[in-house]
Image 1 (spheres, rainbow, N blue to C red):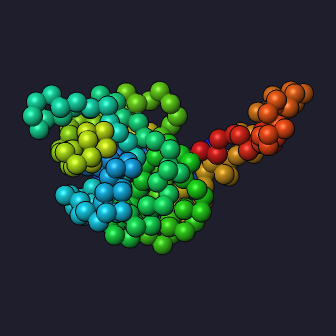
Image 2: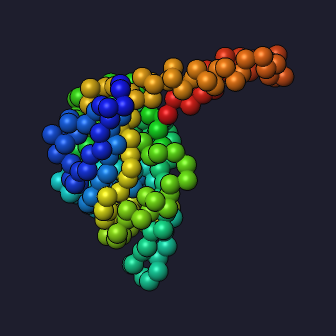
Image 3: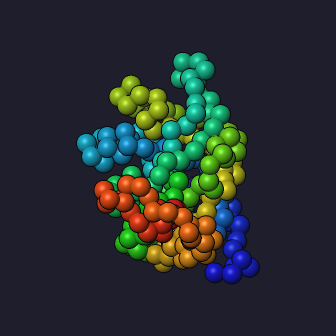
Length: 226
């Protein structure tokens, strides 16, 4: 994909099917409107144990970020968020089909790493895209995109860090479209470009001292795929 093809896209939540089908791997996205958080606690409680969400995900806030906000309860029932950063997507791959089928989620934000098979299986079928944060150190920038905390659901059941936060956002981003509705994976398509200089840096280095114990010998298996 040539750099000239990359686009910056601003969308309003809830996202329509046309919104997400118009995105392609490599686009840079900013979001305005309500976004919900959902980490292990929320996804297990909602999808694994069958507790219905207390917000209209399909109709109102169909973007989920795998985040635990750096937020505090400044007064009873009133919260503020200073920083927002997602966690690795592979941890949540098993929940993605149910999340899309039952609740109509149109975009999932994570720190990359969702298996490519998830994009291929779910992107076109449900009209869903997978967005990645832009590396480490941007938590405060993402936090500035949060203008208000609408609600924090299941705080008593899950604790404040694992609860479902409903965040009102304005130009929240930047996010990279890692997996699009055509099943394309940006990181996979560009892995060779990233690997080449890193492989050159590995040349001539001794093998790991734990090789006798079965440690991975191919450096390409240690490089991030997103």
